[in-house]
Each structure stands twice: as C-alpha cells, then as structure tokens.
Image (cartoon, rainbow, N blue to C red; front, side, top):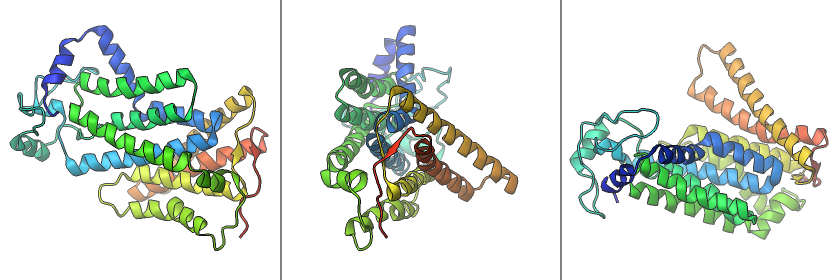
Length: 338
C-alpha cells in the first residue's frame, strides 16, 4: 500500500482532460471550498446539521493533522523521483529513486524514511487529509440529506477526491485508506451518536432547560469550553483548529442561552442569512487583524489564537443575532434559567 507503482500507473494515463478533472476534485477537498459549503448549510438549510458538520470537520482535521505529525510518513513524491507532481508546474526534487515499498503490505524503507525526516521536502502524507475530509463531509451529507443530487455529489466527493490525490502524486493508497478510516470514525460519532440522538437533539436544539444542578449542562459546558483548552495541552495539536472549535462553541452557548434559531424562511431570507454571515466573518477577521497590527508590531501565537476565537464566535453568534434582529430568523424560545 506504500508502493509507488499504482501511482505511476495512474499517471501513465495522463491527459489534459484527466488533469483538469482531478485538479478540480482535489480543489473541492480544500477548506476554501468545504467551509463555504458548511456556511451555506448552517445559515441557509439547517442550523443544527450545519453546526454538527462543522464540529465533525474540525475534530477530523485536528485528528488527521495530529497523526500526520506524529507518524511523519513521507509522500510518494518524497521517495520516488519518477512520481510527478501534476498541477502547478512543481518539479519533483527528491534525490530518491524507486524507494517505495517492495510488497503490497510492506512499509517504506527505513533508511529512506529517516533521511526524509531529517530533511523534509514536503508535509507528511499519512493519513490523507483530503480523504478524511471528503469522507466526513460527504458521509454526513449523504446521511443527513435525502435528495438524490446531494447524495450523488456526496458519493462523487468520497470517490474522486481521494483518487485525485493518488493521480496527482500526493498520496499512497495507504494514505487514502487511513483517511477513509478516520473519516468513517467521525461520521459514526457525529451522525449516529449526536445527530440521531434524540436526547441531545431535545436538550441542545429544542427543549428549554435549567442549567443549575443539571449534569447534562455540566457535561455540555465541559465539551464546549473546557475540552478545547485541554486540547491545547496535546503536543502538535493544530492551534488554529482548536481556536476555531472554541470560538464556535462559545458562539453556540451564547445562542443557546436565549434559544437556537428555527430553520424557517423563504429562499430570499435564507440567502440573506448566508450573505450576512459571510460579511460578518470577513469584517470581523479584518477588523481584528487591524486592531492587532495597531497594538502590536506583529501577530504572536497568542494574539492569533485570540483572533481566531473571536472571529469564530462573532461569525456564529453575531451573524445569527443580526439575522434575528433583521427578522431573517425566528428564535425557538428561552433556553436558560440560572
């Protein structure tokens, strides 16, 4: 599964049409495409489904990047100069030639891995982040929404995004399978244990509650606030994703106090909510960057973390409250009695 022969075979079929096809699908797997899609779902289709999908994608991203850094397994182009990096006119500059695994179930030669770890030429390959993202988002889209065209799109993402990563020379088959496993885990957790859980649905999205003395409230507070800070103690965890998770969680709690919005409204209202959320996000991030620049000579790791937290909070809470004020949302009712 760490052999380069499969990748070389796929690249032997190279045509301009295939290049454009797989470059398109690999682009779909980047956050610049998946994030706007989740924004549309959150504010235009289903607040509950969109929020849960964002949670799943953030946890998947943190787990995938953590494993990449811990395992430090090279990419195909790192161990075989014959593997082309299709797209972007990037030359393969590795000094190694045909140093992939010799058997299907064999691993990469340790001397090759050790030399690359000393002088890495790219980010690590296992597991494939594109694949785990495609499986997490595509799997949840397939399970949550019943429309045929949505399910076709979801299956296309699950199949073609991983295949594009091998064709373009970025991942081994093992990387793809590892990404599928991780994505499947988070689909199972966030769909079957959370989305389909009637108790969680009633508690977080429908039923008015009293937080004082409520063990569910304590558990929710731990997940939404305490757990993100505990994640910062984990070595090599992606701080930006943790900050985003914390910001979204704080924003959700602020909304939860007064009531989660209902997913009602015409196409015009839904489109307006999406546009407002996008504007709030861009304006918040730009404003906070400007303030940091004005107060400090450069952005530090701490100020960057705080900026991302505040941006994510304002994105979820601020956008929703603004839409409520403008009559684009309707609140379900009071949530919290302290």
